[in-house]
Length: 331
Image (cartoon, rainbow, N blue to C red; front, side):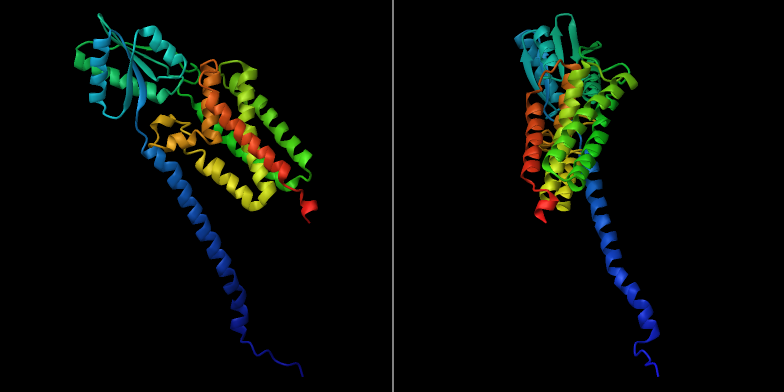
């Protein structure tokens, strides 16, 4: 006789279901935690964006300039970091050097405002509102001159700001795939460098000729894009090659989860909550956005820090790729 099973039929049928409940709950709760983290990190900085210590110059006779600077401080406490300069030429030099967002010129015939919308269209719009309010108080309009305007085909800087997001995402993916799918240090390094170079040339060509939204020298802008792509893909590849999947997750956390919302790409780092905008400028997306804006509109002014930051991240990624042993060697 064939022995009968002692396990009830209903129990044997429900055991696989019970075993699948645990993984199912783990996936659901894990995805919910990631979604909550991403929602908070992306929404919180934007929700609390406000002018904080924006560098503004006041040009004119010393007494009149100091009096108007005090008026600005009183009108928007904590919003501006106001300093006085000798004349309009000094103020314009600060705009071109990315050392100020706007210059109020106090002259005998009235007050006028000079801005650089290429540095931040949002801050330029804010200063126009301030000028309009001051004009109502002074009894005469405050004319506004855009000294360094944004590209007329992209007056809000959409291509330059939002273009960094897909570049960072594809650079992350390229770096992780090269680390996990390609064997050999030289092949990985070659892949990272080749991807960065081609990404710089292709992305800049699309932005410049396809969208007509990126002024400046083509090769210079392409080199900036390539350095950003190298910093992201190189670091992601190095972490993934050295630590495996956990390293890839760490790269996503640093470059995307933290780097994108703290970059200030869609507004300006100075509009983010105190400290967060500064931190974002030491991560590749924020440094890359600042570098590309300076190269495209300001003839390379104020590129020292973003160049150092991106070069540092790229160097770290290359060192990690060199230190990481190929999978076959580890086995």
